[in-house]
Amino acid sequence: MSVLFWVIVMASFATVAFLTYGVLSYCNNRKMVRDRFKQVTTDSMPLINRGEGSSFKKQFLNWISSLGHYAVDDKQDDSALRQSLIQAGFRHPKGTAIYFGLRFLLALLLPVLYLLANVMNGVMNRGNLLFCFLLAGAGFYVGPYLLKFITSRRQDRIDKALPDVLDLLIVCMEAGLSLQATINRVSDEVKSISMDLYRELQLTNAELRTGISREVALRNLGERTGVQNVKALVGLMIQSDRMGASIVQALRTHASFLRVQRSQKAEERAAKLPVKILFPLLLCIFPAIFVVVLGPAAIQISKSAFFAGN
Image (cartoon, rainbow, N blue to C red; front, side, top):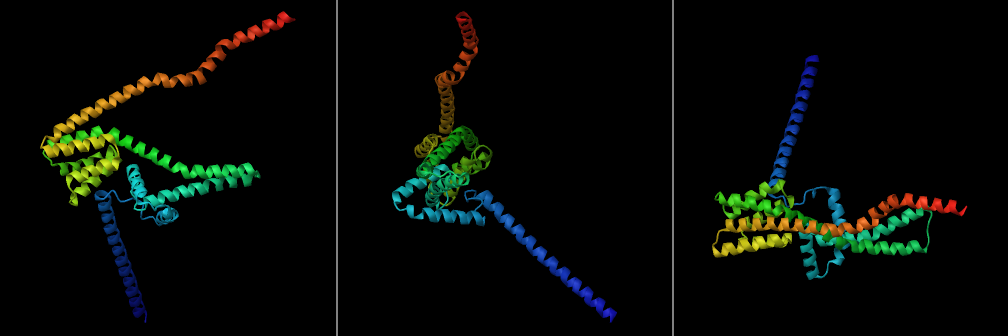
């Protein structure tokens, strides 16, 4: 009896141990496969929005897009707005609907927060209602200005990093690489310099791999960034490719031109500085200097007039 009992116990223990080992091995293999696919997706397809797997973010974006879905009717305006969103760095498939949904949410949220603050403080009157309408209008119309601000900041970052990227392009092409191989190589190296150009070059490389012509892919690069220097560079590369000229020499000339342009912009800002600093001097610094310099004299004059009157 005791021997049979211990045999059953050992068999049960071995069964549970093997089942546990099998389940853990299966889960570990699944985790390794998921990590491998995630690494491949992150390295070779960086244009997929990270964080899309978050269920809360998905639900929130779907809810916001459902709010702005009915505002996206005119196809021409939708195309222009989508281009503006792409130039700002937003490539979500429902980007225009999310944009209008956020504007509607801001128009609704700002007055509600203001009314809640007034209710908690116990201050309610007709002026508060008028201010709520003003907040709603400001929340709805602040979206285009924020989009322009984000777009200009992104274009400035791309413009500043462009000469360094051109140097990398020149080095790779002088080493004997083709244009597509150069873009592929530089897109990996430029990640530490500019994430914006890294994503754009990765997308250009993906377009070239799918069979899109070189001219169309380069023009798409210029349209996606919206930076005038990038458009000029793209036109220069296309023209050099058509004429059979040396693209390396064209890139080197354009890189030197961009650096001269950057130094000229710095000199222009330095020349504007005395005019810009004039108003802070007049409004903030000069009054304090007048108080310090003329204050003791005014006190002495008032004291002398007081004693003379007595």
